Image 1 (cartoon, rainbow, N blue to C red):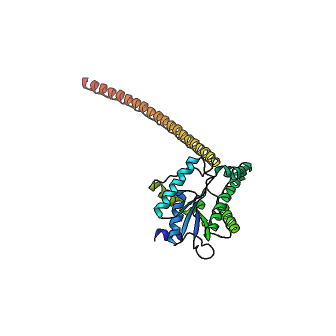
Image 2 (cartoon, rainbow, N blue to C red):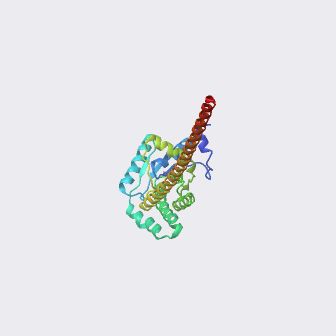
Image 3 (tube, rainbow, N blue to C red):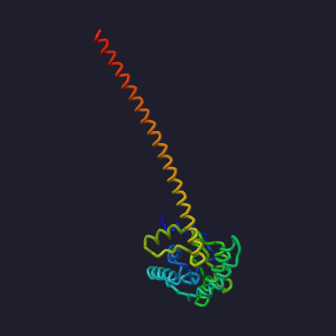
Amino acid sequence: MDKIADINDRFEPNEGSAPEKLLLHACCGPCSLEPLRVLASRGIKTAIHFSNSNIAPIDEYERRLDAIREHARDVGVELIEDDYDNAKWTQTSGRIGAAAQGTDERRARCRACYRMRLERSASYAKEHGFDSLGTTLSVSPYQYGDIICEELKRACKRHGIRAFYEDYSPLYAEATRRSRASGMYRQNYCGCLLSKDEADTEREERKAERDAIKAKRRLERQEAERELEMKRKERRQYDAKQAKKRAVLKALREQRKDGEADE
């Protein structure tokens, strides 16, 4: 079966007909690969809106923007670049996340972040004649798909356009494979400095876990080697003892033969 057709079969259709002119909010190059390919296979006219003031520092933002610029050129899709205003993001979404408590902190921060970015994309879509807005945010299994859907619908309703939400997370593995194969820049954290700190901490924790597992296995191997060496030593001692017995028995047999010969 054609791979694209197989991918298309995974999605639940949105209500109504396909968009006539879709603006696709894109968070990065790797996450845009598969959604753009799937949408193109359906004949949906799509343009990309890169609105991601959450990304910091600025050089990281530029690397991600360069990656999606190159891909947009390669596939012949229009790329619209929003203004970058990380200070504004910090004063809104960043502050909301920092003020949240406990396990809801990240969800609150991410919701505020989605809201700011999708609001700007919805506003642009309305002003420039797009009838629908979608997003590539749902590609990543590390994002909150339910919140993304809610915020996309909220932003679109506010601006009087259609929310075209699809769960692209089944395409994550293929997007990862393709981006690596093409040498596309791949970030190792979501975007904001808070997420970078979290990602760095998680990587350090995973490294510590891996190191602990390696140390445990090393000790287990060393213990197994000691036990094996003890068994080998015991075997050598046993063999030496048996060889000594055989030598004594052999000497006795020879003495007996010599005695019999003298008689």
